Image: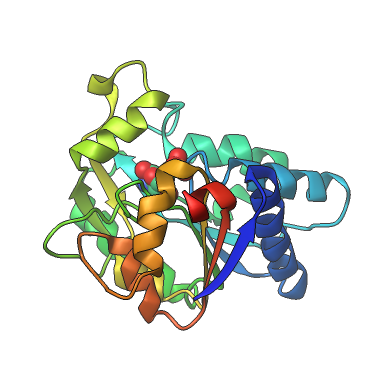
Length: 240
Ligand code: GLP
């Protein structure tokens, strides 16, 4: 795994945005795998700025997002669809029809997940996948446990994730208890992966991920098996 340690959050954001910009310029019809959470917000702001400065064209880009709460409606300001529209899609010239976020209103989540997996395959896989990391080492919403699931699936959130994400909701009771998420094999279909981390709260998960073992109780450790992964993090996440 390649590791890039940046001074702070802003440098991490600009570095990750630089990699995405390069991907978009080199292959204007790229399939981008996108993530939500507070970590990539600054990266999206850099991409919007590059677009406004006339450096980027999203017209041929397709996006596939990692995960979404379940159940949740797209107009809920905590849904990941809302996040993506707000931080990126509404601010650049992407065709909204080419943006894909798991559907938090799906009536039959299992059928939806099977279709999402087919969608990823039909796009020829993701060219560049952005990931964040949970404090407990989750990627997407692949939570620590005895087993990991390969494909897109409906999952229960752990108490620690519900607690960590409660800061975005009015109260902890409002945090959905389940989510739709790409599985490990879905994520591994990406040709290249960038995982981002900022802040001391991510240090333990990052240290484990960079350690020698692969453990289902820290799902990010499995990224060691992918041939093209770059960690872009700040000093706090790296040093603790
Ligand atoms: C969330 C998301 C992940 C995200 C992670 C970290 O629950 N499901 O995709 O990477 O947790 O979030 P944050 O960047 O806000 O710390």
